[in-house]
Length: 114
Length: 110
Image (cartoon, rainbow over all chains, first blue to last red; front, side):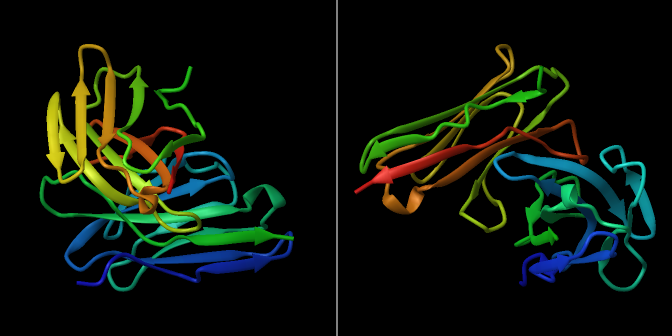
């Protein structure tokens, strides 16, 4: 059973460009979470999605950031007009449709903004 | 005050030692408690998962939760160099966002 997949693993963007990060959850999982990890810090929650629904976006910056999890295909975290402060590791996690609460993480996408 | 406090270390111990890692928290609504291990430049790997108070053992790892003190611990017995990593505590109220500690960087010296 394949784990959570994220791509790209590394992404370099210049200031003002757009970054698109993709996440495919584990098979059978319909809950997706995005977290951001800044250097020397723990993971910070950004957004929680189910298929075609945003459940909790309380950790998303108000501007430039958006997320979706369409009926078909991976979840996408989009950052418009990136700034240097967006440089971080972005992790996606998924959990099953049952009442199990554990989240399983992908390998992350490391975004570097020049 | 952070919702979850974790000493970032670094913590360095000799091989074979018992390691104790701890987190405190302030939100009494947390019901689910997890420990993740993260190797450098990798994703977090789930180690232990506990619901409410009590102990849970898995091989060389033991997780303890004391909700009355808002305190959780992870013990590693017979530590190995391969245990060298950053250990993150995490907790949640339910099928929702996880709140993480800062992580403790652990080194096991051969």
